[in-house]
Length: 340
Ligand code: SF4
Image (cartoon, rainbow, N blue to C red):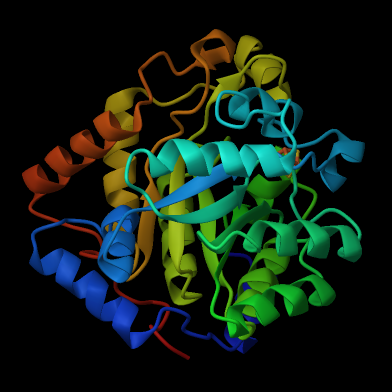
């Protein structure tokens, strides 16, 4: 970690978001034999029933687009989300269609998950209108909002904080990717590590939970870099993570690097091993929402060749953790303290 970030880190106040009840639920999950704090199990225990995230495309752009965008991003994620969000439909129809489909499967509670693009990149009035509308459905218990660390201004968080006060469960799905400045630069992310730290801290101050999206296997990152990301996020009390392999997708700058021989993806065995290492270095109280990026259509995926299926990867990670006799948090010690 560079000195500048180290200094920022040492001066911030870490706010614990998950309640005592949440921590109790996570501890129960481990007592039942789970090796990681699986988000799906946690939600089922918390709400005593299944809760479905409705992925929607509300048509947001991205501020990073003007500077070329992230090297791995195909058109703000839309080619990946197209199977899941019916962009031909209005927001209303996207929500209502999914509620109807899922209700037939017995699901009665929902989050609305704003997925492609930077979903806080709009005037505040527009954001409030969209959020109010989504929460107007009696079945909707909260929002998950995918965005960048540098696009969470105070006035936006104030509105989201008001929903929390009304009892809604509000999550920011934060594009963290890495806690290393040198990598953010290679990725052309257009924000700093300090933006990520500030975003997590500001969300927590408003009672908003944060799920950090992390990529393993980024260009030039060492094993130590990746484990350090796990430790820093744990110390920041991030509430959940989604862990992904870096996937080379058609039409991206990463694809150009790949064909020039400047970047190679991990094979499946390497990725499984890295995920296990990362989980071991992560706090046991960080919820795990995903371990793979299985939404990429095969026709636009250049590399890796192995099948990214979420359940398959989860099973392989479990097999490896069992083989090691370890679990999430087993190597989480702190050079960074649990609380400051
Ligand atoms: S911030 Fe997100 S949407 Fe924007 S270019 Fe990067 S990955 Fe794509």
